[in-house]
Image (cartoon, rainbow, N blue to C red):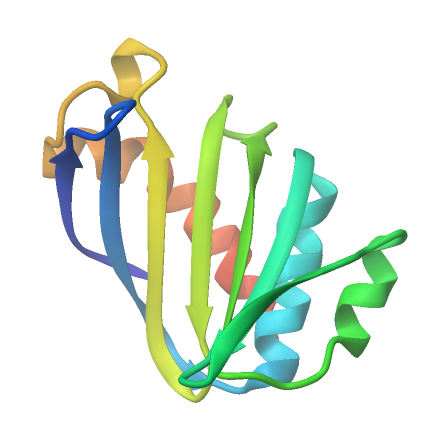
Length: 134
């Protein structure tokens, strides 16, 4: 997976917004597999799906249920990542090679939108997510 760019967004709480390119375009089954892995290593995780007509939160009682979520245009998984020790929001887009990731600026590692530093912090994690798709 390749980091396309990262920028700092100043909102109620500042965060780093990034876009990543997958090696290949992926379908819904791949996205569900990736989301299942992320869910298992995320505290207080929640999932939302949607398309041009709207969105809705999906209740998940067991990570295996993620594999059965009805197909939609995109899937977002949010929560505090046990891997990067920060709140993360990850959105996958069906039939594309695009993933958008926001990381809350809760520590020095995620305080500045430095491409090289952010890539070093997130690349191995994002590569693991992509590998789990296949």
